[in-house]
Structures are given as structure tokens and as C-alpha cells.
Length: 147
Image (cartoon, rainbow, N blue to C red; front, side, top):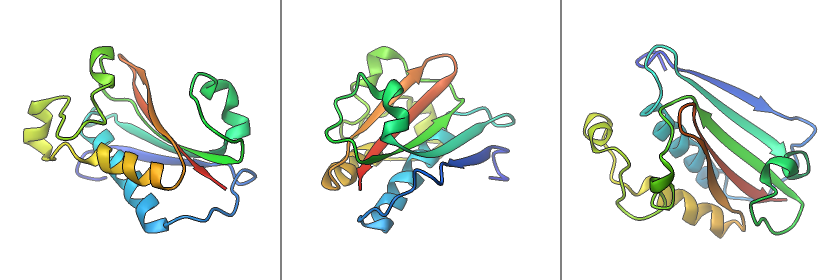
């Protein structure tokens, strides 16, 4: 993170951590993709990314509007204090080759497939992935994995 000056904070609720049967390399790829995406949109000197892992039961208030089957799931969150995501672009983010900001794409690279790959991996594990946004204050990508 020295290149950007950004900091990454992890907040893992150790009580919530359960035994999860999954492809750890693929879940690691999802987390890595989401963090890399966040790095492209956060302030270079004051950027913060938070990685959280919690039990869905504890997150239920925040996820009531998301249709998540089952209750035995972990919720992973990657939150950044970047530029946020305009409401009119949110439904396009999980489409193949979609880029929210071409100037950032030219600077940092990318094909527009990262979030599509993330969605496919999470859905193959029986989970769900979504975005919660605050346009001025950044965005949070969340996904669930059943246990």
C-alpha cells in the first residue's frame, strides 16, 4: 500500500468466524479483486479500506433489504472512502466489460471483468454479492458465504 498511501484495516468478528467449506483461493481472489477496485477510487493520501467479516445474524439490520436465503452465512465487506458510485451506474457494475470511469481504467488498467468474476465465484458458493453506496463517502461491496 506504500504506492498509494492507503491503509487497509481488517475487522474480523472472531465470535462470528465459523468453519466454512469453500475454495479459499477463489474467495481470496474475490477479496483481492474488491480491494484492488477500491484502491482505484480512494484518495491517494487519505484512502482507507476496511475489510470486515461478520455473522449474518449480526448484520441482519443492515441487510434486511437484501434477499439472502438462509441465516447461517458470513458477511464479508470491503468498504472504501472513495468517490462512491452514482445510482444510475450501480446496476451495470456486474455486467461484462463495464467500466464506471474510463480515466481510472486508463490509469490503473482493468478489463471490466473483475466484478463479474467475483459474482460468479460467490454465486457458485451459494452466496450473494451486492453494493451499498454512499455517493459522497464511498461504497461498500458485501458478499455472503454459507456455513
